[in-house]
View 1 (cartoon, rainbow, N blue to C red):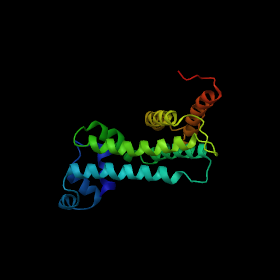
View 2: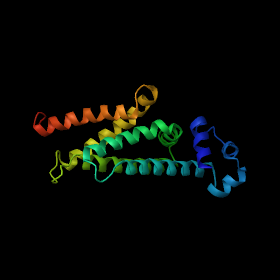
View 3: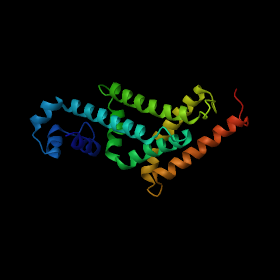
View 4: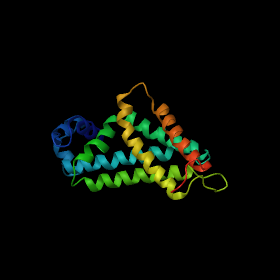
Length: 194
C-alpha cells in the first residue's frame, strides 16, 4: 500500500491525489486504506516515515566499520546519490512533495531530515579523524562540513537527475575531491581560521 501511495503522490502531488487512486494502485479497497492508515494524511505521513527509514538504513549499510574513514564518507555520499537515482518517486515524496505541504507534515519532514543529517554528520566526523584519534579538523568544523555536504547533496540531486551522463559514483567522487581539497588546504595552513 505504501509503495502504491509513494507512486501516486510522486506523480500527482499530495493535494490532487486521492485515497481511491492509492487503493486502486495498491489493488485493495478504499476502506482498507482507511482501516490501516486512517486518512490521506495518515498515508502521506506513513510514506514520509518509511522513505526516511529506507534512506537512513541505506546510509548505515553503506559504511563498513573496517573501512578507512574517507572511504566511508565517499561511500555514504555515493549511497545518498544512488538512493535518489534509484528511488526517484521516493525522493519526490520525501523532499519535494513533503517540503511544500506545511502543517501537518512539517514536523514529520523536519524529523526525517534531522535523522538523515545525523547520519551524514557521523560520516563526516568519522571521515576527518586519523587512525590514532587525531583530528584533521576540529569536531565543530567537521559538523559544519557535514551540513555543507548534506546541503550540496540535497542541491545536487536535481542536477544529478537532469544530467543522466553523471553517475552517483562520479558525482560522489567530484564532491569528495572538492571537499577534501578544502580540508587539506585548511589542515596544511593554506587557509587560516579567522
